[in-house]
Amino acid sequence: MALVARPPPHHRAGRLIMQRPLVVIPHLVRMYVRTRFEYPGATMLGWLSQIVAYGGIYTAIALIVTRFGNLGGWIWPEMALLLSFHLLAYSLGASFSFTQFRDIEEKVRLGTFDAVLVKPIGAWTYLVFSGINIGYAGHVLLALGLMAWSLPQVGADWTPLTVLFFLATLVSSAAMVCATMTMIGATALVWVKSSHLYSIFFGFWELARYPLQIFPFPLQILMLTFVPLGFLAYVPVAVALGKPVALLGSAAPLAALAIGPLWVLIAMAHWHYCLRNYQGAGG
Image (cartoon, rainbow, N blue to C red; front, side):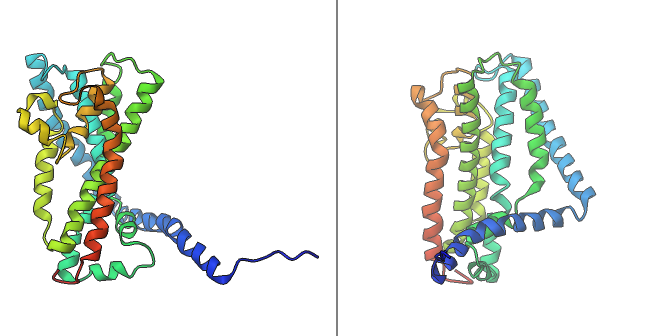
């Protein structure tokens, strides 16, 4: 009878370590979702409040755009698509990062981040998947509804290639948001305080829901370079609609696809740098 060779014990242990995150992640997500739905009424009320809040903001923008005919050359259906893309990309990225990395500052101050470092899986993986924020479901529902209404209204030629580009840039934009939140949170490992950086982020995030060309030239450059939130919605939606893109021109499609992966690589380097320089409670 032929004997089946078994890998050495240290090889089997190596495989188990590599597979552990894949086994643990669904468990972490399931536990967090169950705790959030312990009070389903409160959860759904939170979703409804987000829909009403953003719905009020978008109604005000719609009234302004329809009153003056357009905003920077964008009519209301095009603005609706821009707003829905902006909200959907942000919601997908922030659900994996905002509350998780916003709390790092408190963990560092109290010394509880040290407990995260001794978990059997990576610190980033544990933080992200043990706290996926389903509170963004209200954002997603509103964004999908507004997008479903606006897509047939804009009159764009939705070829398979355009649809693929639209979806790919949505993923790229969400990845950019997640990477940015990771970098802001990781900064607390070195500086102890990083919450002020969220105020800066959301200041530019508010601007990113409008066409870039309505802003002064220096601000346009800033939002395509050091604070690249111009790529969050304006660049991909403008390319999909066949509109000229401020400053980027013909390079806009490639830039919209590349910004997410590029920002992820930068965030990975920043995360590992901050972990190496983390000195424990008190920074």
